[in-house]
Amino acid sequence: MSRHPILKWAQRDDLVFMTIDLPDAKDVKLKLEPEGKFYFSATSAADNIPYEIDIDLYDKVDVNASKASVGSRNIMYLVKKEESKWWSRLIKQEGRTPVFIKVDWNKWVDEDEQDEKVAGADMEFDDVNFSSLNLGGGGGDYEDEDESDTEEETESIMEEQTVSGESGASRSDSSSQVEVKS
Image (cartoon, rainbow, N blue to C red; front, side):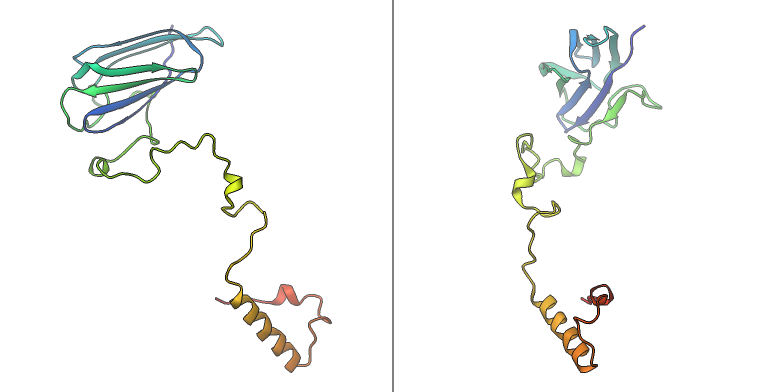
């Protein structure tokens, strides 16, 4: 008996992005028909288990303009819709979507936002060392640029302690008692 791999999908008005998560797949077979019939089968290299997907897409597709790519971690299929229109779901079958079909939120764009260029959407971050960008939160040498408020508050506290006769050096718990007001 075959299992179903996870199928993630997203769309634009003229395209459907389908990603099948199956690392190290072998004997990959893909079939796409103009009526929207999509068939996938492969075997996982790790444990030799057969996987299969056999679905009817929501509408007709342009088989010649669609492209597939078999990678080491997944199989990606860029399906060109026959008509440029937004689909209400991936498959024709109404009712509950099969559990192995998921929305690909990394590629998803709402219908009314698809023409907007999302900043950074086309950037690749695989080779970026974020710790070298000094973005804070790393516990490194972070220095507050606006120290004037802190210095004024510290001076004010010191003046209050001097006026009331208390020395900052004689109170070991003075730092835990200070409230900073913004």
